[in-house]
Image (cartoon, rainbow, N blue to C red; front, side, top):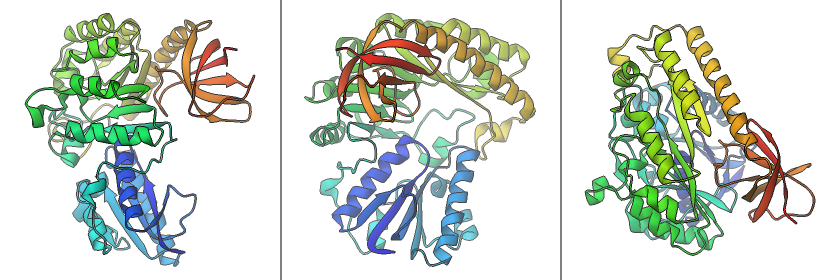
Length: 432
């Protein structure tokens, strides 16, 4: 056990990770030594940044806390602190059920943690972070919360109403990260589309991305988690105009059946959805779309599921994830719909959907063989360097396995010609 050392464990999404990175910087400024996601805890304090989004994530967070609670009882460290989404959502229940935890903090009051440890939160470094990602890329969280209130989603129950980060604060953060060597910025929010509405009375995503793209040293900007309704179409010419804005957009569509979309409270129709996709692709040639879809939501019969399958065949998403509906306490769906679709039916539909997407992905990947792409190298492994093109977000998208024909530098860009395609990987070699 090392004095003045804190181990921070981050669970869940990249938005959580950004919170942990800001907290680490504050701890460092207060004189603590920090280790993020250690293989084993060695500090006197352990902080767990929890996820509370879906049941599996909640269970992972609880199991992690229980394991650490046992380690604390064995004297391996002195203080256990829990923060983040799970604590925000279930604070009272957790305090009662987990007496081994010394302090709980929610999603937004973790700054008090420093005060409770006898330190002070420093506003002068509020835009600074300690990167836990490889040093050449970072996530940039531009807002918290959501005003959409989709029937299935617990996010508004956890994070509250949509709240944008002021634009100048974000631009300062980007400049600071560029000075640290960051080249690639993955812009994230629960709802990118609404950025700026609460602060400026209008959607400001286009202006933010335009100004980011003009900062020297910003090589790639990639957009995650936009919402289709009231989408800020003015961002599309920004994407088309700037070479350093990746031709990539992550926008969860969830379903296409009018029945299911209505039950989900998604505010978009089956007819409007392909029109929306067409406009995106027309205005940004070469755009790669990532979407997320859901099967098994109340109201999805076999007919509605087949509508979804046909939609995926026609839309041909370059990137697609999917999951089976799981009822979340407190949501509109939990209060108003019966979750009567058997789990085995949900699982079967999910498998059918992902099998279809694998075929589509293979066909799209095959089209890249023989073409050359600007590729950033993420890491070196025994047989390959591993990189990504502008169409590949870290951790969730296909990677490029680069043949070791000569030494490459991690974090640098190379022109890589694709020699072979797999459904979720490309193989290539660097141009000599």
